[in-house]
Length: 213
Ligand SMILES: [Zn+2]
Image (cartoon, rainbow, N blue to C red; front, side):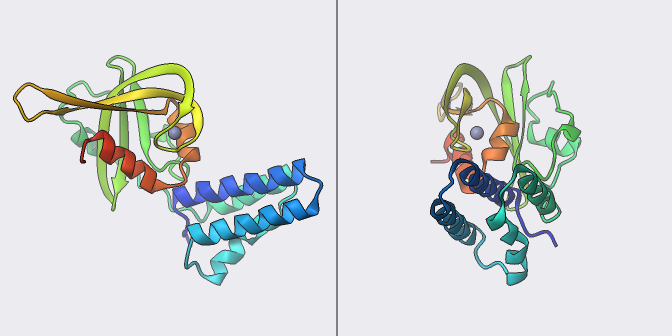
């Protein structure tokens, strides 16, 4: 019974860490209870309309007190995650037909239950690639990526992390002209995926960078 999308799984994981962190740092049981309540509400909102049976699976989150319990809770959850539907190499190639010397990543580096999108960087061309599914359809976007050596807010996952600028070009209306649009995103997409708990934010980023509006 897989019922958690990767994004929801990452969300629950983040909430679980929040509870443990509160237990470790606060001796006040009222504070702990307040956080437990808040987490309960946030999970209910994020995973609305889940059955009682599924709620039971998530229930242990409220009693987490040690790092070991947190780890075993997360391990238990993994079996319920709907993995990212991994594309084949040829499916990825079809997304970037203009890139004749496309350098593909090793697909087994991605753990399908930990990623909502795939991303890799080609240091030969300074291009960063993002591959994702929207309503099941495989899509891709790529842009020139420049690391900033600074920390900032990532447009995709909204966390404060080491970011760089991705710049995507689109043909302008006049022949030979290009319009560019850039945004800061995490340099490390594994970290980004872990912090990505809202796919709407990701899709919104894609729409903006591709100048859909
Ligand atoms: Zn990010």
